[in-house]
Amino acid sequence: MKFLVLIALLLCACGSNTSKGMITAEEAYEGVSNYCHDTYDWSVAKDDPEMMYLTMGDETDSTYQVVFRSYTGAFVHFYVDKRNGETRMVEKVPSLNIEEEAGTIDLFDYLEKNSK
Image (tube, rainbow, N blue to C red; front, side, top):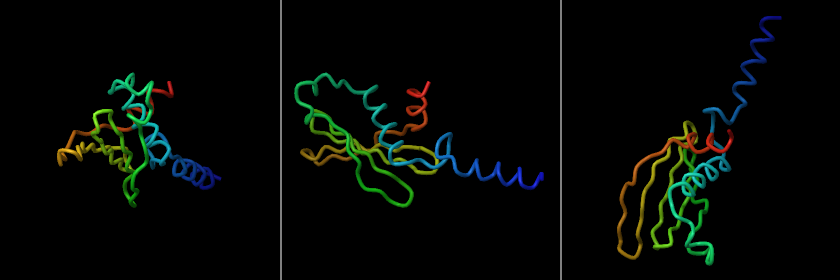
């Protein structure tokens, strides 16, 4: 009986995608969206939503990419680690041929914010 309870507990723990488990594409998008709405002024996009937006980018075995377009024409590429939520940001300004590391965030900080 103890063996069955142990197996059931292990199966429940492994199946969880939240609470520091594997990140889903939806969670990657939601967390980055929450971060962007907290960090950037979206009032510019009220009249013209095409000026600022988020979109999913490429996906690899280990990361999701979420891309934020600023009204300035700059893009911030968020590379979300599927295993731990660590998110690396790279800012790109195509018109000036600039690309630079812009820091990191913990995706879980922005997922938990709206779940409280």
